[in-house]
Every structure is written in C-alpha cells, then in structure tokens.
Length: 265
Image (cartoon, rainbow, N blue to C red; front, side, top):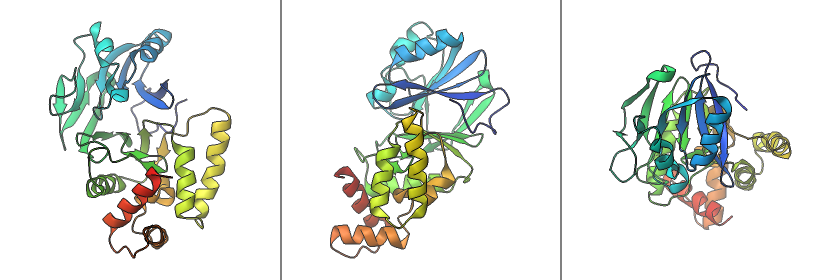
C-alpha cells in the first residue's frame, strides 16, 4: 500500500515491507531502483526486490537497534558498492556514509535529497530523514505516540519532537512500527474528552480489521491526537499532574510523566 506521495518526484512510491511482529521496512522506489529504510531483516527485503525486479541502490539507517539494522550485512553482501547512510559514531556495522544534523543526503538513483535531523531520545544516535514533504523518523515519532527513552532523557525527546512539530503540517510521517491502536488507547486515557482521538480510533480500528497499515500519517494529525506532541495543552497537563499527584508546571515534567505512564499502561 502506497499513499500520500504527492510531493515525491513523479513515478516514486513508498511501500512498506513487514518484518518481525510489527516493524515496517520502508522501500522508496520507482520501477527500477529502491532505497530501503531501516532493514532489520534482509529476507523480506530480498523477496520484495525479487518480486518487483528492483535493484537495491541505497540503505538509510535511523538508529542502531537490531530490528532496524540486522539485515544490512546480508543486503550489502551482494552489493558492497551501495551507500549505507546512517548516524555517526562508527558503532553500526555496514555504514559507509555517516551523517549528522543539517547534512544533505542525495540519492541520485531516485533523484531524492533528504535533510538529516538529529532526534535523540529513544537512542542517543537517532536521526531522521526529511525531504520532499516526507519524514522517515524510525522510532522517534509514532502515529499517536513516541519511542521509549532507552538512552536519552525526557528533555532530549521533547526537544526532538519539537523539531519535528515545526515541519509543515502536510508532512507525511513514515514511522517504523504498527503501534497505533495501543497508542490511541493511551491517548484516549490522557485526553478522554478529545473528540479527534475517538474519531481517529474508529478509522484505525477499521484499517486493522482489514490488516492494513495505519502509517504513514499526516504530521498535522499528530498535533491533534498525540499526547507527546501536546504537552503544552491544558488537558494533557491536567492529566499528567493528576497521575503524578502533584502540579506539573513545565513541559519536560509533563512529558516525563506521560512517558512513564505510557511505559506502564
């Protein structure tokens, strides 16, 4: 399923390849070449390439977790010349082009250029790729949620989400997991009077009943339904303060409170 690709160069599609229990490996492709984002498992990607008769031309990596990098070695074993672009630090096996905040990533085979955005929080090395009105954000921003804080702090993740919040609302967000139903259940607990959440739950339930992905999603929707993007709203502050049994007066404290709440939800 490919949707919301109006701003990509003509002829390009973004197709999800499923991996593990709930990962999406995003494949950006035309009728000849494909750029793969976060290939945690090589085999479903190889099957996709064979089925579509496509040539792998580049790999993008958002962070070091194995479910995003585990397929790299096998994928490049037959194509050692292709660029593998990801975070700096030398800690991810197979990366041939390390990038940082503000770098441009040019993918000549598909006539694409992405800007690198550093978004630490889920991990310290996490980056996102933005361009052509699309965002590949790994495990930083989810539809209705955000990544757990495995390495970073609440302040870091809030700052990272604020960076993404300031992208155009029409940005199409490609995140890496099918977590939407659970995220919306939590969002509804945080904001029980938010009509947008309830309405969107009906849409998501229908998609999941048909085994359809709930991503990509529009960034503008996240500003309406995602509590981690709404930490400045009174309804979220009130719920977070009630959960914490103390008045919370700053966004970092609100974010930390709802992140801990979600971790145990």
